Figure 1 (cartoon, rainbow, N blue to C red):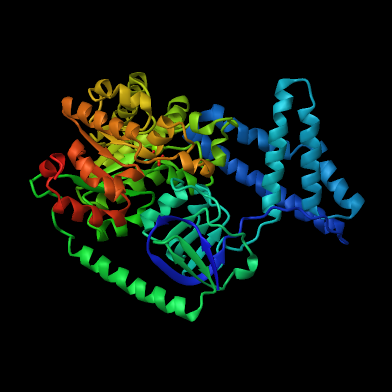
Figure 2: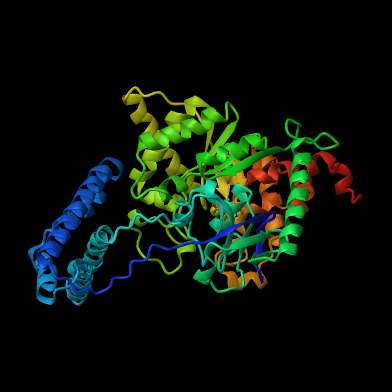
Length: 547
Ligand code: PEP
Ligand code: MG
């Protein structure tokens, strides 16, 4: 038996087979080929498939983001037809009797170096495009149908790290727990584990060894321990604790249907955070009063191209209908920083957390924003949808958003398409928004405080950088004072304020949040009943008086 320490993301115990997460490896090997004519044919087929993919992408982008942004896919098609590029690949295959993958990779490298060395800025920029088209052809040539996690029974997923774009591809029904060597407590993999209410550890002190793939493992989420090939005594002890936890959960289930009201009559809304419609089952099981944060960017992350208006409309409508009149707050696209989507083709940034993310992308690429807004406004007649805008720093941004909203409504009117009147609120997750929250409150219907980003920006601590953990204090008085200030300013303007960052689920702060007058806590579904328990046992006035 081996034992490794990790940082606890979510409690609970998982016992099951270990499955090492396999990254799609694109290692190109040089292989000798006897029948080079057949190999050239294989290349041509892959190239034609790539051109078809690009044609589809072009058509889709044309509808979604307009001609100027779609043009890149046309350029890529032309580059794939380029005589020099094709001759180079085919002559490497026939001249050196090698595989098409090697010839494509070599030609991609040679051509991109050649472009990069040119004087002309336009030609220089083509270096990245040659690489891009070559990678597209390579991924077709090297296509394997191996699933990322190769299992048909639920497993403990072990990985070096998992990016949001990777976690969205995992089949959630097959995951018992996550263990990663890297990853921070506020990373989106951690958030996903909390949403799924499964044990998870990050920064686990071991080196991934493929030999443990398929072996028995135990994740003790409570104590932050990962056991590989546990001995019989440990297995029995963990099974006993699993039963105990199950019993505790059953007791909490008795709180379903009960109100979130304190002993002295203060009410608070307890909502759930979700990233996917599949999360709705746990939302209902845990009796959430609504959805306080639907991270809509996951719809974008799980696709290889922009989701259409219709695809989004169907998802938003389904969430609204399932929640049957309860409030559903859908946050508009928050791409950027750690949530990267290749097809957005964002420029490389030195400081992505301080870069073009969230509302900044929506305001600088309004075609993308408009598609989402149209879907949201249309879906809002099927339930109580509210729209929430992320990463706000100024009044000017709100005015720009409202101008686009007006255009969207006018367009829908013109087309005789029905839409509702959703509430519109903002996330307070930058110190700038906190300091002007008195002014912002006059412009919107509600505030939701994103403590994950607010903490990162207030303490100047990158939420992804695990080496800064020693400096990270989630209870820092600066953050707590900011929350209190935002709530006061919201109430002065007659609107409500909630918290949808991870701090909202910190049970050691529930009483403090009630004392501040926080109106809503939006947390992972599994945290709703434990918070309800504390709320129902608290007397806010007595707590404030220090008793
Ligand atoms: C936050 O920043 O607190 C938040 C809820 O948004 P996200 O974690 O998705 O950035
Ligand atoms: Mg945020």
